[in-house]
Length: 208
Image 1: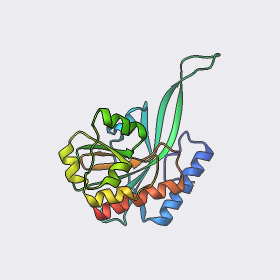
Image 2: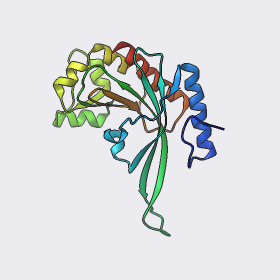
Image 3: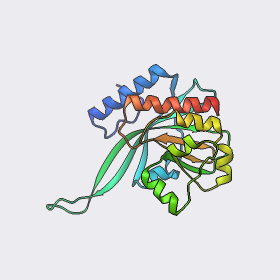
Image 4: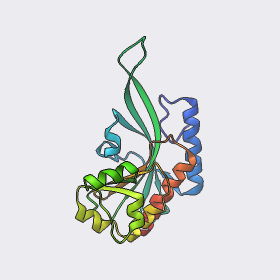
């Protein structure tokens, strides 16, 4: 069987999960294979803590105003072996879904994630977060870090913030490099969460 993703080294269980997720996405969206596109994933901070990141499959969603994408990603880590019988490191692989959109505005570099109690405490001592005085609900919900406050403030308008507010997932992370946005989380690939991420970028491309 020809699968619409790279199956080399995958277990039969992981192949089944990828295939189920792909078929669910295809049932919800007009999904097409992208071909060979370099999305420059190592440039994103969300992947820089890993030893390596690899694209297992990439799909373009054609029913948005502009194209957006769903990515099957493999992250590779080297974990320390704490067994008393062996030492050193071992290879650990995780498989995740991320969605990607190209934005009209230049955001600079931005990281958006749900705000935690620790974030609120740090903010009291070291004010580094970008807050929106006219949108307390958003600022109370999400933690926003940026390298260019002016660009981020100008680009993260009400329409953008409304789309982000509707993305209710406690582990979701959004990172933007200039015009490129990626959204996902470290949870394993699943059909339901993949549809949620795809819906987010479709709405974003349709309204922002």
